[in-house]
Amino acid sequence: MSEAAISGSGLQSNLLDDYTSDCELQGLTPESIRRYLSSLGIFLDFINRKELDIFQVEKEALKDFIRYLRKDREVSYVTIKYYFSALSSFYSYLRYEDLIDHDPIHQVRKRYLRSYKRVGPTIHKQLISVEQMSQFVRFIMKPRDKALVLLLAKTGIRRAEAIGIDLEDINFIEQSINLKHHPKRTNTLVFFDAETNDTIQNWLISRERITGLPPDEGPLFVNSTGARLRRNGVYTAVTRWAKIFGIHDPKSRDSRDRFNPHSCRHWFTTHLRRAGMCREFRAWLRGDRLREAQDAYDHIDPEEVRLDYLQKIPYLGLY
Image 1 (cartoon, rainbow, N blue to C red):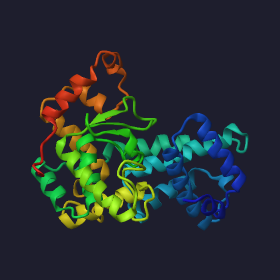
Image 2: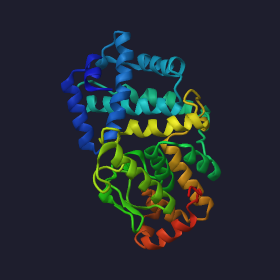
Image 3: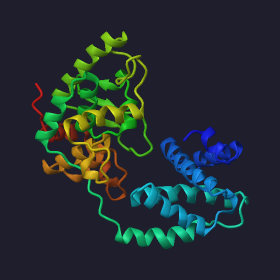
């Protein structure tokens, strides 16, 4: 949701600017801020249709908003929870700045969303087998998308981390990548195996032919014009092939019927665990912030992790 769209819903642009600055000062990531603004945009559209003042929203309007999300938009509990996280952040800001007398979100959120959570369904993620992943990667005809899916699956990195990779970040001799800083990641070093290396090299040949970019400069993943691939481009690249292959149904409300970039991270983690990799090594490769394992990180040898990774990461038999 753009600033203009939210402003058009009745929120003055200077207030939105101030709120965004406040989020940045609190240390929220750009992606969290983007999602908060998107959720606010849906809420503002809702109250504008009801001709309500955003500064005078009370519990009845918020209860109606929950009904609207559940019945009209048919969103999941997790999504409703995120909407109210955004609303809680925004109204807490308004209260802090003395723009409202009280925060209307807390009691509604506490009363209705907690009880809804107790009866909500358990969310299961789709996990494809090693054989299915091999077939899926082979099925992808576009060199860039093949390299993208394989790298996501073999490293467990996030979308934002994948699009941030430049050629200078990759050590093809040691088969490692130094990722850009990410707020949710501790360790920035990840490894890849020989078949991932070959797939990336094939993409770089196509990349140079299509865009004219040299094979050792610029972003790893680009679009047809040579510009860095963006988040939506990654999502589309993965889900388009997954839908054709038959593992992604975008219309299904069951997460087990959907395959997206995060499914690759789930695949990476689960199959390394099944192969016997210890939790500390998996957490180190994922870059997780685990308080109980933080002391162990000081004693982890990257070379030991690399050797264990190469032994346990599933081989897909692509070459």
